[in-house]
Structures are given as C-alpha cells and as structure tokens.
Length: 227
Image (tube, rainbow, N blue to C red; front, side):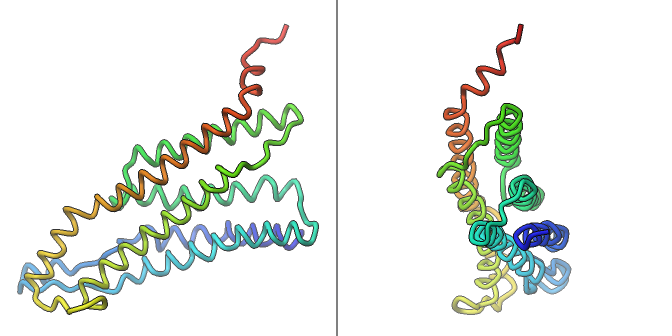
C-alpha cells in the first residue's frame, strides 16, 4: 500500500474519535449551581477543543495525501475512490452533529448531503461510460468553504466560553450577569451561525450546479432508452 493511501486510511480511522468528541455538548454549564445559588459555572469545552483539533488534523491529511500522491507518483484507483469518500464522511459527520447541537439547520445539511450523493452518482455513471469527471475549481472551493465553515463554528463556541470566563476581557464573575449573557447568546447565536450555514449551503449548491452543467450530456444520454 502506498504512503498516500495510508494517510487516507489514517483520516478514516480518525473519524470515530472525532465523532465521539464532536457529539459532546459544545458548551457545558452547571445549571444546578445556578438554580441553587444563582451562580453559573462555565467549564472549559474540552470535547469541543479536541474535536476541533482532530478535525483540523484530518482535514490537513486531505491535502497531504494528495500532495504525496502527486509528488511521488502514487496515484491509484483505490486512492481516487477512498480519498473523496473520506472527505465526505468527515465533513458530513460534523454537519449532521451540528444539527443535533442546534448549530446548523437540518434542511441545510440535507441539501448538502443531497448534493454529495448526486455528484457521486454522476461520477459512477461517468465511470461506467469510461469518462473521468475532473475536479472543478468550484468543487475545490466548496471543500475549502465546508471545512472552513466547520472550523469557524467550533471556534465560535470556544470564543463564547472565553467571553463568559473573561479570557477576552473583564471576567463575568457575577452569576446573574453570566446567566443573562448565556440567555442573550442562546437567543442571538443563530444569527451568526445561520450566516455561516447559508454560505456553506449556497457554495455547495453552486458547486453541484456547476458539475451538472458541465456534464449534462452524461445525464441527457442516460435518459435516452437504448434500442
């Protein structure tokens, strides 16, 4: 097995560990302490930080395996199939978990996953016709935007923790102030997160449209019944 393929498989092996930490609450509050003494404690978001680190490392291996494959002539059919699969598993895992955590709208993630399935199916049809769909610049931008958007969402929650604990300024040492800050965050955080979600979704949709537009002849030919 080539070095590039080993790097790709390493990325796949990292996904279960990423899923474990990413599935934990991104912000942890001691609500019982608030109810008993009107003092709310905010704990360091260890799981969120670990999930972010794992995601960044796994995303870097996406660049690394491609670089190694091209530089050392290790491009294989196995790599062509598994590399994009690993990318989709990593990104869609994060996005699906965001839905459960309230960080992203469910319909947006459904649209993104639908795009991935449609283009993957198109690639399979093209391969059966002996044609390879080359990666477009919109596809590369889509991948960067998705990865960047996920990183931004994780950093956003870490920044909220830092604000509540005074890492970015005056410490919110009053329990009432902390609770009011938390409540205000809970009401308004969707504005920023919605913008990030819209950017990811729109770029993904346009990328899918671009693939379909440039390869519409494959779909058109496939819709004609062979005699």
